[in-house]
Length: 383
Image 1 (cartoon, rainbow, N blue to C red):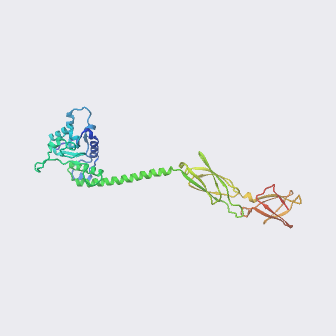
Image 2 (tube, rainbow, N blue to C red):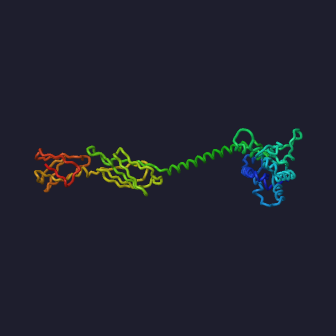
């Protein structure tokens, strides 16, 4: 009758080699049998080769020797971690002897981690005396019964990782009775897929970290102005515009010399990018601007000229030390009449404005004067 086992394998080792025993257990239990191989042999495990027994984690301290023997009886294979240290372990030797007594001599798989099998040198011999007893080496080929171990550091090309993976597949193929090449080729494809996925995942993580880093980097913002009203060549160009940027915890100021210049605000906190901030702009001859904008690396803001500066003409006309009431005068192409107090007022449209205006009296063309703008009600025109 087919015997049922609680454990797929028993890992025998010396406590000083525990890290290798743990590594081997995790590798064997973590191996997933390919579906195609499962379909070819219904006797094989459905998915995993688990559990494997490793006494330092699976048996409680101070348990009896009979308990350890019971675990061996419940295990289908015996995996022996072979090092010069385990070669001197009586417990490892006893576990090998017990497994042979159970009639499972052909299910012992030595896993060579360190040292050389059958070297005969206590410093390098990695096979326990019990292994040497049950699997003796002889120069006579008919008498030679030596056992071939699986060396995780096998000679040849390839990385240490691939050599260890190959060794694990050799162990798996022995335990399953399946062609090593069939298992190894599929495992290599798995490793390649995992490697590609790991690389892609790493690249995605790096890209995400880079994006986070870039998004949190301080940034510079360049602010330029452009004419919001029709340009008037006869008037002074925009100059000395003072730009004030009001941030939640700070205030920055810069000056723009003209429309071809820019204000530069350096090292602004990344958290403010795209956030609303207040901007105040004050420039001679232009309307002051106080607005809220979304803060970005490049800002363009329109600035409108104040039409009152050079267009609102007001003055008092005096001739021979007397005011000139109710008198028609020409200011360029415009005609105005002074009031009873000799005052006049004229608004010139923006596109016709100048820095100075030529004034004449229609009734006496010998009387003329140049009016400088801007001017106001306290200015006096003497004819």
